[in-house]
Image (cartoon, rainbow, N blue to C red; front, side, top):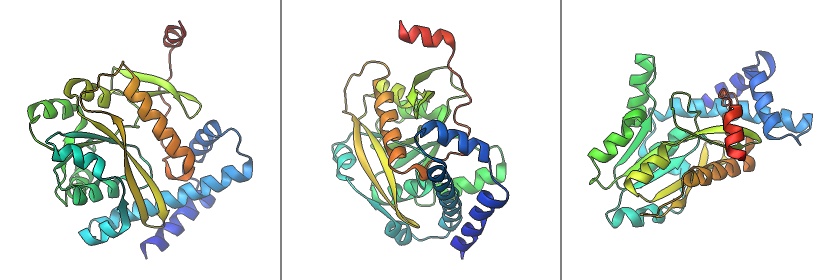
Length: 276
C-alpha cells in the first residue's frame, strides 16, 4: 500500500507538479553531460520514484521488526570492520546519501554486534527531531550532534564502537573545507572524517550501498585508511570523494539530485592557489 502511495506521489512530482525539476535537471546535466534527453528523463523518472519509495520505507521502518530490516538489507564484508573491533580498536565508518541511508544505520546497528554512534544534524522542528531520533535509535544506536562528535570521541576514546557519518553534505557551516572535482564540478567536502582520523588514528571504512530491487538493498565495506596510518592532508577526503562518485555513476537515480549541493562557490583565490 505504501509503495502504491509512493508511485502516485512520484508520478505527481515528475509529471504534474515537478518537484525542484530545474535543480534536478541542472545537477544531472552537469554530472552526466553525455546523456541525451531520453537518458536524462529516464534517470529523473527513476530518481523521483526511488526517492518516494525511500520516504515510505522510512515511514514503515518505525514499525518494522529487526527481522524485517535484516531481510531487506544484506551486508557484505562485515568481517573487515569486525576484525578491528574484535581487536579492541574503534572504527570510523563513512557513507553517502545513496539509496536508503536510514535503513543502512538500522541494519548496521542490528548486525554489527558493537555499539554504533552516528553523527547527525539536529532538525529545526521539535516534533520531527523527536520522531527521527526515536526511529534512528530504536535498535540501540546512539546519536551525536555532528558539531559535538570529535569531543565525544575524545571523551569516550576507550569505548570499542563504530562511529558512523554520512559525509557528502555541503559544508556550509564549516570554516574548513576540502575542494575537489566531483561530478564535473568544483565541490566542497567536510573535513570532519579526516580531522577525526588525524586525532584518533582510527581505521576508516567506506560503506557502499546499492539497490537490489524495490525495498531491498546491499551494503558493504571498503577500507579507506588503516589504523595508525598517517596521511597527507586531503588524502582521506579525496579517497572518499572518489568512491562516492564511483557509486553515484554506477546507479545515478539513487543519489539525492533535488538537493542544492553546489551552493558554495570556489573563489578565484582558491583556484589560483591550487594551480600554483
